[in-house]
Length: 70
Image 1: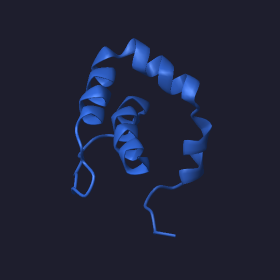
Image 2 (image 1 turned 90 degrees about the horizontal axis):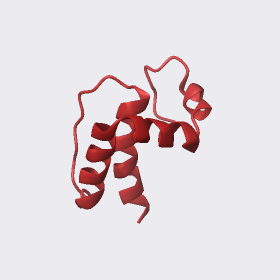
Image 3 (image 1 turned 135 degrees about the vertical axis):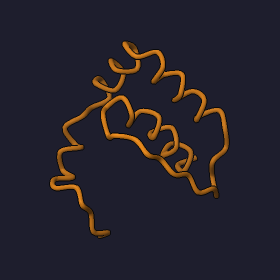
Image 4 (image 1 turned 30 degrees about the vertical axis):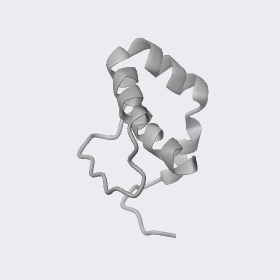
């Protein structure tokens, strides 16, 4: 396992698809960036982010994760 500076990474499991769907609904900008990232091919590229980790910011990152699963 890769060492992490996150104190308790198991807390991420507390979020479910319903919470992500709600945040995508109430935050059109989040949904906009999710769609922008999803529409481009980032496979085999290095991407850097400088964001505070919040539920809203995780959603665009999920678009990148979904690309690696294709």
